[in-house]
Image 1 (cartoon, one colour):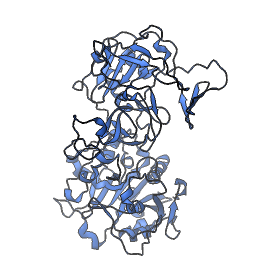
Image 2 (cartoon, rainbow, N blue to C red):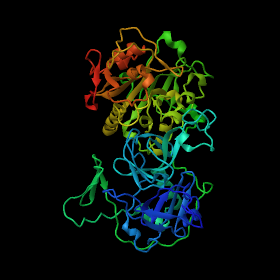
Image 3 (cartoon, rainbow, N blue to C red):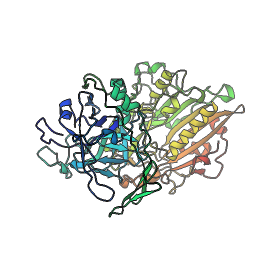
Image 4 (cartoon, rainbow, N blue to C red):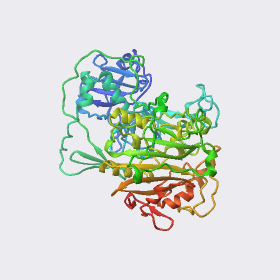
Length: 612
């Protein structure tokens, strides 16, 4: 980055995203003037045999294209077709195609970052780069970066760009001040090396691409960048494999259009190059400020609480009337005093929503149970959820609902799970409720699941990725959708259940044990789910139990990643479940298919172990 006099102002990283178009951060190039005097330095790297390559400099064509947005912290700018010494064509270099599809990586996946930290030669971070979470339009991950890494591409394991790196995430105190590694408030008089960084942050490429499409997708250079696929790489001049070795026991092997970086593990790399193209079309520069266009590409959760009184709630005759009726579980008389009732109608306690209902236990601030109707035939694709927006239900007292004061810590501490290892665990999943006659109706129904009355603290990896519990939920939903079937599904926590042997089930005959507390909140050791369907004119039901007891027992070292072996899921009898929860399941229990007849239930180790 240079000023009008040619003085170096700093360094950044950028990458080509199409023919003649480069992407970097807005805070690298805030204005056309900042780019106009700067240089793009290609081949500033070390070869596989450890020798410095000769850099090639290109200027920027800001009159052809300059587009920026501060909220998403990106800029795209045209690059001139010939190098400064007129010896090289830009067409000698390939580009990284971008995709608007979200979810190209899951929390826990490993990432790779190609960067120029502190203005140094190209470096590739291939270790310890784990995706921690998505936060709206941003992604948090661990890696080593320095100033100059701004604008780096962040890749998933398939070498798709998932994010545009732009900053570190500092630990903050209650006043919002950045903290040093020794816990003191940091200020600009201190060196940045003293800051306590807890993660790095990149802007999601899906958010950027969707924004670009809306804001300036018709621009010739932008359109070409978003739609032109890189031509296949040319065949190498030497037939067979070509091996370039280095003194550091790191080499590149190339065969045809594929290269492999051996470090000594092998990572497949697509060799992206393109044939000569015409020079970019000269068009007017375009600068977009945040006041002109918002970054509104997040799929927002929208709930109209003014119409809560019109929600139909769970329907007992959803599968049929008479013997096919599926009533709500009955709470025993000894626990009736603990049921949260309506503020204005103390005789009512069933909180009705779209496609489901919930009954709240006020002393635990959590649901006794939730009950959902699922229609696989009317399931709608409402798109991938990109953000959370949870609300308390105003029909009951707020003090009876565990809310943002507990779960909100995730915004600060998800990068360090020793601080708060719990996520907002849906009881009725959004996907279970997203059915209706139209896509708009299905989305409204799914959004209604974002009430804290439908939420319970679950260990953070239970519903991230394809862990076993999430896998069972997907299995149930896929089974219904594929067969266009209906089901009634009940979910809830077990309050103060008896302790279970390590990796085993609690004995329903034994006395209960108080749930352990975290941050003053008692955390359930177990969660349960019951699925009820119609089968040959009769009800058929089965139950599952998930244990997070083992994780609660090692709360002090919770920052360790939870494995599938740590989480135990069992298929259990509804009779045993009734003893654990103290709920009366009535006809649901009578319809148990007895697939969990093995004493103490059956351990589910893979999805194929489920019997319906």
